[in-house]
Image (cartoon, rainbow, N blue to C red; front, side, top):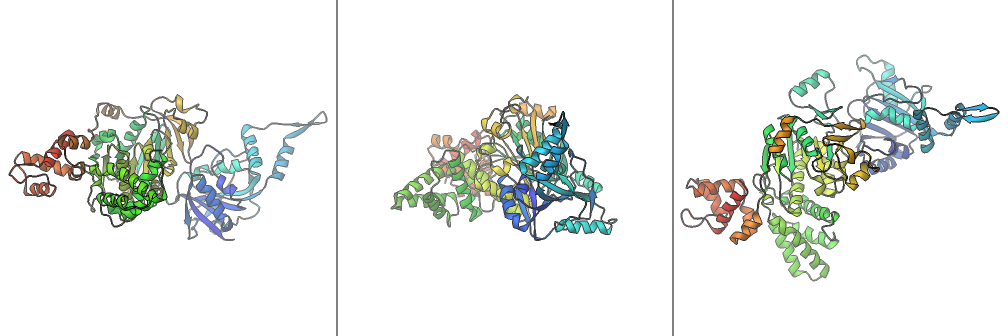
Length: 611
């Protein structure tokens, strides 16, 4: 029999059993294995496509393993008596064959029926047993299964290696099966789902301690009773959701303050509140001041960024339509463009020359969306813009949705390109993530990032409009909220989330279960957050209007380097490099010590932006 193997990252679910997709695929035999490198699922090849379809529809992330896995030597594990209540642990596996449940159900009913006064009387069993029985009835199957753990490779006998070979081929030895209901098998294998396939964390305790001492991995207390290890190659994805003032942002800052100094971390911060992390050694950079990107420097991927902006606005109801003519005009405008200005001019040209009404309407709509981006200093980066390294907070505060989305999507693409080339590993944090919208570009990038050692943490007020790949994180913490979309997804009866106190969270962790737990934050961080004030936004349009200058030229010229050069210029201490920069930007006049009107406007903008 030909076997298809998949590395699997299982989405947490409050509905059904975690192994629903396996059962629904109607695979007659399957294996569930985890020896420390993450969860592997073996399915007969003829059922693989159906399994894949069901699994991905349930939010699983699958990696097809084209080379058959080399399973370590196995030794049989004694399955507990009916009903199974415990898991066999995070290391082990099962090999199971699905069979019709009718005979098993008949035996179960017979064993729970007695004759009283000549009449049959049904005897009730424990709640666990009844629930197990119901699962066999609902799924119409019983599973003949063996369970196993892993033997020491050095001392493993021939039988241990032979059993591993049989597991690889989905051929279990006879006469050692136990009959399990679907619920029993789900409980027995629950902890095997804790890690996604591909984790390469050291298994030797000495190596683990050394990795922690050197900062390559670290312990992160998510909530009371939930301690996890964050390490390269593991699934470190995190999603926090809750109402303002529920403790969500405080918890996020606490987790970030635990990051070792040698970890790459980029925090995308639309409000500026995470600038408090400067006290814990984070560099705080401002988009448009310290960080400037150029979407067109992405080459062919520039179209994806701008399409993603339109898709997000459309899904949020702020873009009337995402029509084929609009995408056609955008694709033509991006072709051979080197900056947003080039794209804008190409769209304006299409608007003037178009003979078809639908093309004119599309070009007019695109021009309206591009204009806010041209007023954003953060999108005037060079083609050689570099990605921040180390622990960094990037404060965006760009004001307009179009500019914010274009900046974030471009930054994510830069992270992906650097990670793919082996030049960046770490964690990307996106706050106010529900403002991104469920755009395909975000889901695609975040799904790819995990393959290259980058995990994404996200925080938002609602699950509505959150990219699905981010909402399906391994670690999910839901704080107090009455948001309808979140309640429908997590707490349909509204019995938990609306009643949580500040600092309490409903922890929903893959492989660990679901429960309410407090998040304990140090007093030092609480005081620092209380006294912190974020930097002011960049009032570009206001200053440009006051001085009567072109806001687009002002946006292109503005940066921290420009501000510092202007301050030295007016103090009579400008260097040759300062003079060259101001001359190239058109900010320095022809007379000694004179600024142009744009130079005066830029100097005022520097002061009002607090640069």
